Image 1 (cartoon, rainbow, N blue to C red):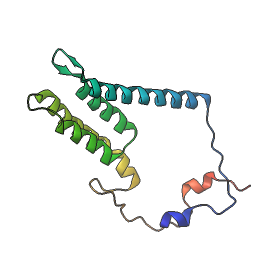
Image 2 (image 1 turned 135 degrees about the vertical axis):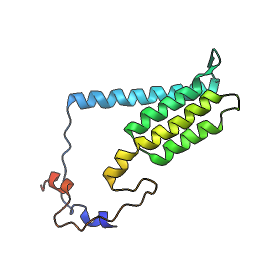
Image 3 (image 1 turned 30 degrees about the vertical axis):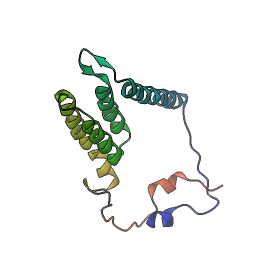
Image 4 (image 1 turned 90 degrees about the vertical axis):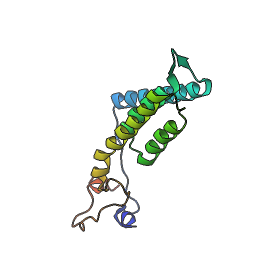
Length: 145
């Protein structure tokens, strides 16, 4: 509820500015996301194998590592790696070890993001913050009409 007390008053506006390079970056990242998610989906659907290597497992591991370094969604990253591990057969030792390492990598990829937000590592509760004597920094970016 403390967040609502710091929101700007009615009538305030914010102007978001961008550059052509940022637009190109956003479009490229969007299409790369669609491409890798589509590749993972098709690989799991068709269960590709190349010389006894299950491509779908390695695509899912690479998706988890790349995605959760950029978009730190702690619970979903852990869920995907755990589900990937659970669907492995007993004879897929390399894939099982790969999912365990992916789990560890994704877990440690979250550390900088969680510390920046003021969260402890294992819980999503925020640590108590000192009372603010001045308005939040993001309020300085807003201008009155």
